[in-house]
Length: 325
Image (tube, rainbow, N blue to C red; front, side, top):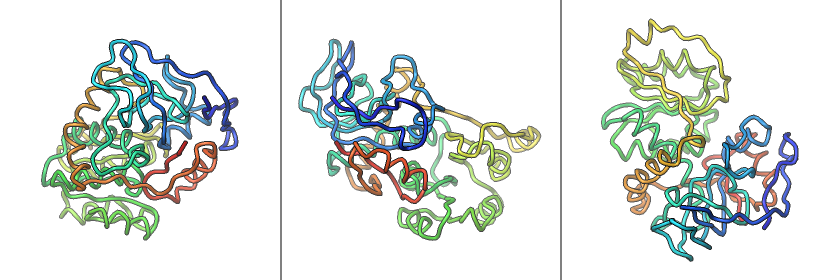
């Protein structure tokens, strides 16, 4: 088969479309003929040599894909050859074929085409696990989403609104904020021109955000804690703004707040299977009914993955960028 390889870490030009050995499904795994794959910030980090795949994972980038099951390995249950699916991967989505544990596979939701389905696994698993399973967002609470126009952000807005929460977002342009508003965001903050701490406080009558979903990391840590409400929960899922910062613990104590940092790729198979099962139970009916939909900025041929990486580097997209085989 062909796959995107990274002979040497570097810029987008480091990505190479090359012939590699076909993967073979092992115990409890299925083989997928890939139709499309999602592009994620983690892929850009892997390309730069900053985010190596976990032990045993494919060396090729790509944390999600959609396609048709081509083979079922020993002990893999619930799936049959020919099933149209999408899947959460530890790597290998930038390829013509991918192997994945059966517990990380999802059926293509009703009303979603096979290519677009590739936009769903990573964002739904990330948002559901962090906002609902870990941070326990409840109806009537306020969720602050940094990067509201990103793939993660566009999904977080929709799921939070479907759960009866109020949503505040940050983004860097009026156009991106307008896209967030169309998805249901209630409070729009242009982080280039406004202080999100002040805007969130103003928009919540001084209470603050009950849950914050943060992709920035160190740069926003202290301000995120300032923006939290009493008993607030901060979920850090990205490090675009650095990895080290000082935090005033007295502020945490005064507010009885919690700060959590989580990743998805390195979790155990059992943990990933539990998250995927929860997504299938809670999120898939919302997608199937049309209340929640994947937001796709554009598709790019997989062999031109470098162009997709340049687009993500520029942050000019809204929603997901997909690679098509």
